[in-house]
Length: 440
Image 1 (spheres, one colour):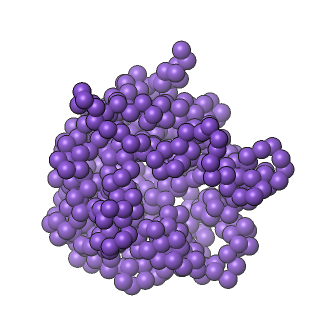
Image 2: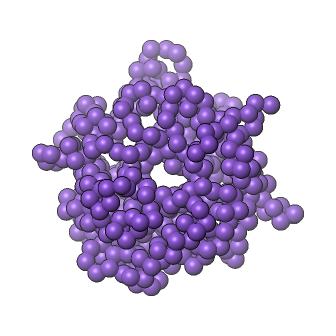
Image 3: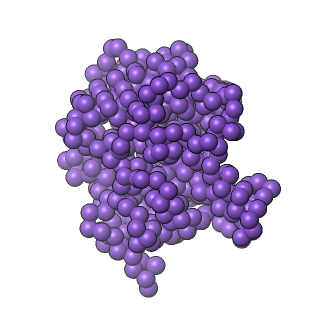
């Protein structure tokens, strides 16, 4: 048996997002978000599902924190619903919304669980979308004001702040392909959104540090390494081209201070309007970078390989390939001057069922996590400065356009009764945390 031990202060956690777990979509003065509007639009979500109730974490957070303690989590990554605290995104504050997050943060601290707060995990106030959404440059400044408000309220207890989760998904799934809220299909708009998200990140980074100079500020990027199918030069070129065009749009401005040449060449006249000083704002030094990793792109000279013979796939149709995560972490650590890293999301959707014994036996998820934890430790031995790992997700939840059909949780949620059941993978994860090691 091989044993992979982690450093004493390695931070083991789990992650969620507000719209996916909270429910309470119009409770206690909360405003409408673009995901409220989108999920209520017929034909947008599988089975017509919505996040109106989701996991009802808004009312059941104490039960969920008790489960976090049962798992032994050292940290919990969650997001604030912007329209819950500012119903129209600006102006009037909703005190009941702030009070909810006060109670959540206080309960986490009482349980000795470090809160990692994400300011934006996709649920934009609908009021802003009515004004053009992220294509409107003014929204970047409103986001910085929101960030300052949050830090002034919670900065005495929350020390780790993430500006955005997966800006690439916001820009392209939401504004280019249209599969996510707000459901726009416009390439030029998508690239302008991408730039304004980066501008908002820079402005919020300043605002957070202005409100609390001791705060640690980061951003979370979802990265899919592009790997060649064979050792041929043609496949290598194709893989590098895929990486350059799809994965460097945010890495380069944040860590190199410019947009990649490949994006200019690809986008042409649809490149966003960039003002003087924008890139200096965007490329401020960060305290950490979060990486969300789920799978890789396998590429040959003809394009992406859709199905790898003999490979395992999750319910999302994503190849299970843990070694690519190690290679990704090593690659970006060599190519960029990075701050400390966290894996801020990693997990797998499988079709778990409750067995006759009342338990959820999910060996495929358990093995998925085990292999990825091992590759993370090997990456650290390669010199990657990885400080922690957040499994996606704490709970089965509303999986965006897939509704409730994809289950990622360490804890099963019965969507009829809202009963929680810790899965075998969750029990195994608790042992990993307790021992601070993975056994193979």
